[in-house]
Image (cartoon, rainbow, N blue to C red; front, side, top):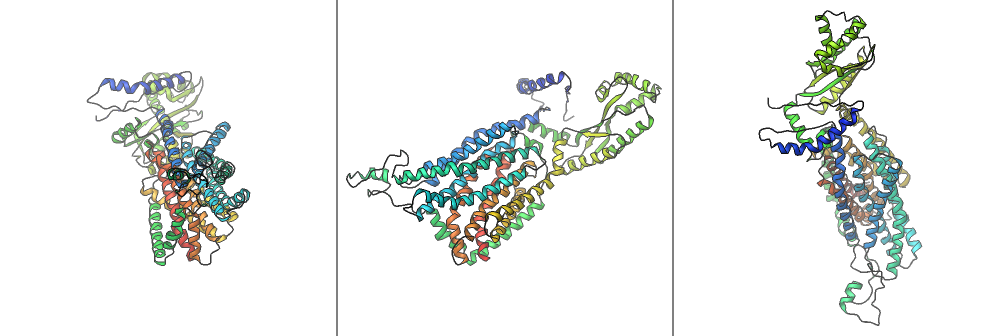
Length: 639
C-alpha cells in the first residue's frame, strides 16, 4: 500500500455539534506540534478537516493587511514625485497628500456605511481599497492638470472664475469615468454569486464617495493651495518667502527658499515638462504616416492574439487556490491527487420524503433508480453502499416477510446489529422512515469539464426517478460555479458595455466619440480575456469580478482622449490628435501608473485570489493605456 487515507466522522446534529466544532478547532491547533513531536522518518502525514477550506479562505484576508500600508506609501510617494516643482512656492506636495487622503476617506466612509448596513464583508472585498486608491488618485491628477491649465490661461483672474473653469473642464471627465465605473459595479451586483455581489457593492459605493470627496474636499484644497501661492508662502511652513529689494540674502538662502539664485520670485506656472514632451515629440511621432501603418499592424497582431487566447480559455477553480500557498491544505490536495485521483467525490443520494419501503413496487423503484445512477459513466457500481440492498439480502436469508410493515420496522435492529454504520443512513420515527440515504462512488473525475458533466448527469437522473431523490456532496458548491459562470460573465459584460454606451452618449456631445469609446471597451475586454489565458488564469468567480471592473476602466482612458480630440478647435486631424495628447496624455499616463502602483503590491501576495486580481488589473491598465495613448489617437486621425 503506497498510501492510506483515514476518515473520522463527527456528529453534526443535536448538542454534540458544538462539541464537534470545538474538537476540530483543537485538532487544527494542536495537531501540527503533535505531528512534529512524533519525529516520523518513514512516513509523511498530511491532514484536512471539514473546517479547513473555510478557515484558510478567510485567513487570506489577514495576510493582505500589511501589504496595504505599502500601497499607501507607494501611492503617496508617486503622487508627491509627480507634483514636485523646483520652486519652493509652486511645490504641490500638500496637494498630492490631500489627494491620496481623500481616496483614503472614501474607503473609510464606504466600509463604515456598508458594514453598518450589514452588507457581508467577503474576502474579495479586501481587494477594494487597493483599487479605489489607484482610481481616486487618477481623478486628482486630472483636476490638478485642469487647474494648472486654467491658471496659465487667466493670469490675474480671481479664484472663483479659476475654480469654475477647472470644474467645467475636469468635472465632466471625472463625472463620465466615475459614472461608468459605478455603473459597471452596480451592474455586477445582479450576478448569481454572493461574493461578487458584495465586492461590487463595496467598490461601487466607494467610487461614489471618492467622487464626492474629489468634488468637495479636493476642490477646497486647490483653492487654499492657490491662496498660499498668491501670498508667495513656502510650501512646507506656509511662511511668507523673503527676497524683497532691501535685504540681499545669501545665494544659498535664495536657492532654498526661492528656487533660483537671482533673488526674484519664480515665474508664473510654466507647462509641465511631460506635457511638453507629449506636445513636441510624442504627438508628432505618432501622427507620421509610416508610424500610423505600424500601429495598425500592431493592433491587428494584438487582436489576433486576444481572439486566439479567448478560444483557449479554461474554466473552473482549483480548490487549492482558495488557501494561501504555505497552507497545510496544499500538501493534502497534492497527496490526494497523487494517490487517490481515480476516485472522485463519494456522492450521497437521499430519499427525501417518507415512502413505503415495505411495498415491493417502491423497493423496485428505488433499486431501478440506484441502477440508473450507477449506469452513469462516472460511477463505479461495485463501490455503492445501500442499506436497503443489504437488508433485502438479510431478510431473504432469515426468511422475514419484508412486505409487512411491522416486521420490516422491527427487524431493522438486526440489520444494525450486523452493520452498525447503517444506523446513520436511516432517519426513523416510531411507525415510519422519514428519510434514508445511500452512497455511490464516482471515478475518473479529473477536470472541471468532468465535474460539470457529472453534476449535470447526476441531477438529471435523480430528477427523472419515480422516488424523490437529492444528490449531494460538499464539493458541489464549487461545481455549481461552472454551470453558470460563462453565461453569467457574458451577460454582465454585455449589459455593462451597453450601459457604458448610454452614459457616454448622454455626457459626450459627439456620437462619433461614443462609438470610439465603445470600440475601445470591446477591444480591451477581448484583450484581457485572451491574454489572461496565456498568464494561466482560469475563468472563475474571481476573474469574473475583474472582467466587470475591466469595463469601467477601459472607458476611463479612451473617453478622456477622444473627448479632448472631438472638442479641440484645431483644423487638421493630426493637429487635433497632438493637442489631445498634450492636454491629457500626461494625466492618463499618471492615472495608469498610479492604478498599477495601487495593485502591484498584490503580486507579492501568498494567495491566488490576490495574485489573480493583480494580473487582470495589470492587463486592464496596460491595454487601456495602450488604447488611450496609441491606438485611439491614431485611429481618430483616419476618421
